[in-house]
Amino acid sequence: MHFTKLVPSVFYTDLSDGLTLFVDCLQFTIVHIDLHLPQPYCVLKKDGLSIMVFQDEPLAKEHHPELRLVTDNIEEAYAGVCATHPHLLHPNLDKVTVRPWGAKEFAIADSQLGIRFMQW
Image 1 (cartoon, rainbow, N blue to C red):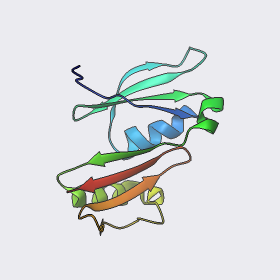
Image 2: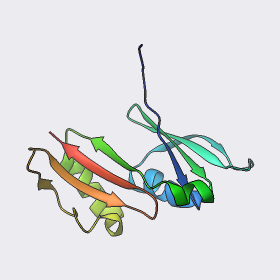
Image 3: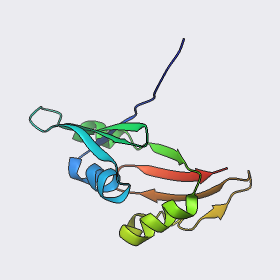
Image 4: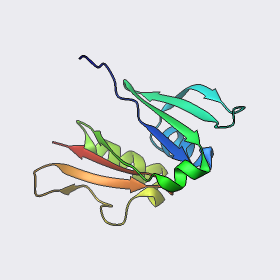
C-alpha cells in the first residue's frame, strides 16, 4: 500500500469557527467551498497540508479531535498565533515548552479542536 496524503475532517457546529482557526489564525487557504449542501464544507490547504472542515452539529458534538502540526520553527508559529489570536492558546500549554520526550510544544484550541504544535 502507498499513501500520498492524510486529509483529516473536522466537524463544527458553526463552520465560521473552523475558518477563523485555520484561515484567519493559521493562514490556510480555502481551495474549495460549498455552502449550499445540507452539510456545508470547505477544503483548506497550506504548505502541502490539507484539511476539510464541515458544518454538522450532531457530528461536532460527538467528535473533539486533537491534531499535531510539526514545524521546523516553533518560535515563528508561536509568535504568529500570539500576534493575531492569543485567545486561542490552550491554558495548559500556552508557551513553547520542552516536553520530557524532548520535543518543543505549545497548543491552541477553539470550541471544537485542539492543535498541538511541535518541533523535534
